[in-house]
Length: 372
Ligand code: CMC
Image 1 (tube, protein in one colour):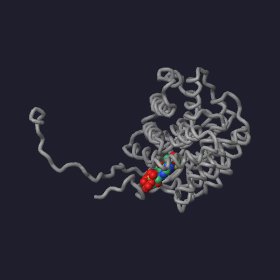
Image 2 (cartoon, protein in one colour):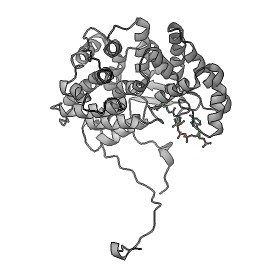
Image 3 (cartoon, protein in one colour):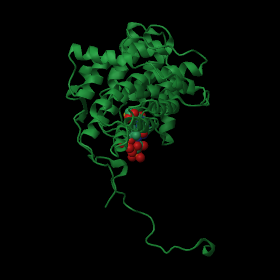
Image 4 (cartoon, helix red, strand yellow):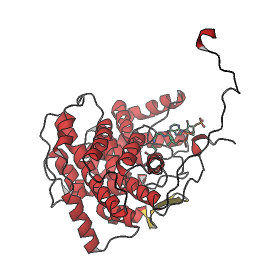
């Protein structure tokens, strides 16, 4: 038995949800480039869960179900003040709140297909409300209730900031949600599948996935990118910063990918949006610093930017606090996690690989008082 580090190249399951073939990403056969330009996030949720795009009636029904389920149990909002609220990272708060949400769902452990779809809607609908409400409570502000007349993207920005977003903000945020929704067997999705393959419940699967997404090698990279852009401060400093980091063998966040070789197809959409938004906000330097880091890094290493690199300046331009970037990733990716959880339940087998043992050979047990 020989181990493969990081399971690189291992095909661990079949799936009909999304695919990466020759650096092209598709959701159920639709090219991400088309979806990013044309689809609403609600259409993507439907596509991932039902493996077909909705007709207008089906889309309307899903939108209604999401709108009807966005409100949080008051206990969840009250619980934020029991956290060390000014110290806790919102991603940890989200992980805890989603786990707690399961306590208030009477169907949490009901495993039939219809109950799983109802839980899917509840989880998807409540995730943005958790992130927005937590963000307001920690600032001493009152959470804003979701509005039934707004789209998913509009509602999140409205609940976060307390005013209706501009059309360009909605376009940018919807696009980011579409681009982050699913990504084959990435680390957090695999985590969710491993968890529910024990026949554990959907809340456990999503809580586990949030934990995996939180790390800086996965979803946590977008916040680290913004930290780097802030440290660099102006385009003139970018070259020295990147070269210094590389000479110390440190990684530059937002570059590289386990699967893509020529480039992450999602990055160009966010790059375009970053350029546009930073011009509108009158802070073009965030795009300029990003573009300079991009240029210098890729002149040194053949590793193109991934989805996290330009999403940082996009979210910053939308006026979103930097430590909410990764929770926002989760608000979108939960649609993919749920799709994979449903697929796992449909054709389940326990996921239990082996380890190549590298410890000592067989040894004799020595009682504690006889040990040196
Ligand atoms: N900066 C500098 N060097 C890098 C980077 C980077 N961002 N990424 C990879 N390398 C180098 C790495 O040092 C190694 O070099 P060497 O062979 O000389 O030791 C080589 O490339 C292979 O790297 P690896 O870490 O073994 O590659 P991996 O396939 O295990 O990791 C990755 C993929 C995404 C974790 C990695 O590229 C990375 O750490 N990138 C920065 C974090 C990041 O942006 N993560 C977001 C990933 S995409 C969206 C998501 O999933 O959330």
